[in-house]
Image (cartoon, one colour):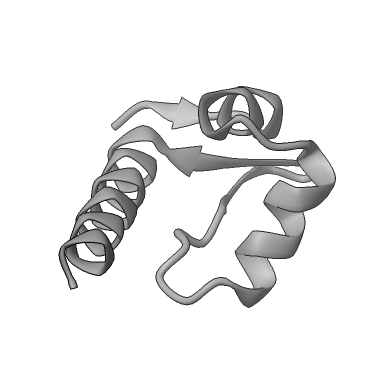
Length: 65
């Protein structure tokens, strides 16, 4: 398991860090961050990849409808 820091996840998703935190609280299916230290959090890279894949599938299904 590779842990990605917030800045890495935000860059990967193409969003700001503020949007990343908002998504973590409001978007259904968005991965929950892990506490990796007293003042540090991160996301499992595989969970972020799965989230992106699910969003692509959802979009493709909506485009086909």
